[in-house]
Image (cartoon, rainbow, N blue to C red; front, top):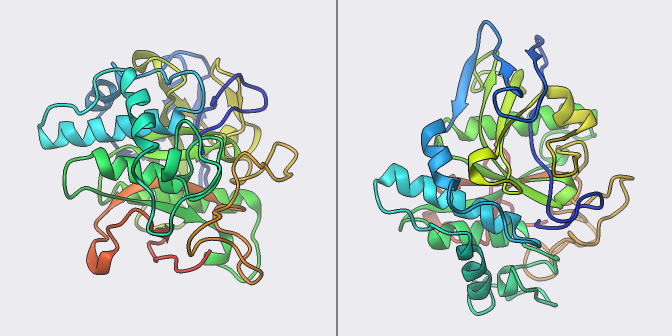
Length: 329
């Protein structure tokens, strides 16, 4: 999930945002956080993190190192935010910590099923898929390993098959997946590491607005999503993305063109298979004839939860966007 994008020099993109099923919104364009601000709807509900604490969590640890380090960088931001909530010293204070994590990945972190080969310089044996960078399982592992004890993270996946017998329109799928992101903030108002650009980049989704309560509408009308992009220094990494950019035409904040969620995980821009972000090759999520997709043809993110019963705290396990444990691809 950490990879160079075909149009950018390395793991670049940005994220996010989804649309509305109900009403519209207004926004202004620009590169700075102020100029790029979305105008909240007259009836607006905010979900997400504390902006001051979010800025402090990434201030000294970004931008990402050159190469496929985006998921490591975002994981560090999540861990630091949880440290702030727990009123403990920040675990990460330097960009060099990204390299420290990558080194540790070479020696520990294999799943209960083993690890994918060939291994690489960032994910090491934490991957269950032979990604160029870090796969979603690896990201969940990193966040859980370094967060305060008892903090649990898992990979969540949206695919239309979890909801319908036939595929709805693409943008409807995007709206539903983004609504699930917002609903996660009802349990933990913390940043989430979200995979974008077909799997080529990871960013933090740190907040957003809706025109109705997210717990009552599925999908809900989202009027703006706040992201933090590790391609940028922490102090200038905050951006807001509108509906059409997130679901349709993408955007460019200055680090290359970002397709955001206008294509599924594992897809190139022309919707062919992106072999830099393959499916698992070990474990129960390795696709088969009857269940050919795991991350492919969907959207993927890492979020905190309380799924600890019967060994579920292990970050090996993945869940649907509705919180159901995945026992097959």
